[in-house]
Image (cartoon, helix red, strand yellow):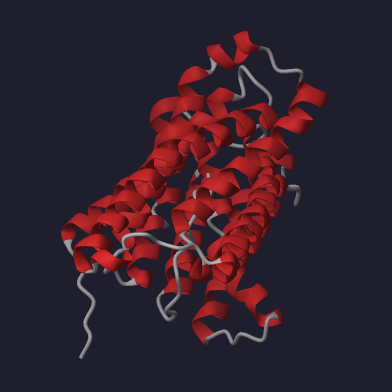
Length: 314
């Protein structure tokens, strides 16, 4: 019988990654006080790509050393053209999806609280199985119960007494749908490629695509970017580089369902971070909506064995 070990170290790595991503919502909100959304995403993504370069180098060296120790005749590795092609096609596709999702999120955070943004973004966990229906993947009754809970939670969290929804909430909801597509793209390409290299390319593509509208529409100034250095570096180094690496390490020998559950704590941490750092609070109705949505997030993952997404959604 093949039982999966779940060491405490792995759980702590994933919990730290979720904490970093939850606090990243605060960094995104603060950063936009100095620079535009496209500029923030462009610079943070390029920093994230740069941070992963040494990680790739170190991982390649460790793999080469292990291969050479196991069989000296295989110390010179040959790269398959097919895998290289998949890596670049997958990286570009993931980068385009991440560009769309992260910028909708960034604009949405401008008009809503970081706590609400965190929970609405986490809806991707419920949306992914629904999109899977169109790809002829079956959904269990637990998924449909989770969808109902998420819809009720969204109503309590976002819909006001006048049955209207804020612009920021709409933008972040679109972002959740786009992150769902992003996850499905990753799900297709990740088994064929190296995960860290795929992430590095997607951050590079996202950064380049974000900087194009930033230069045309926002005319970023170096002085403004330097003023926002702390939230930008946090989002780039910690959210993209460190948290992603922690996720890779933490998911090794870890039940993917349990890993996803730990990572989904990001939404709760975003609420706590918004309250402690920015002084943003939620009403009783909104807190109830968060509780229902978090219940839906857990319910959507419990019955399924799925690969946790290989990306930072913040």
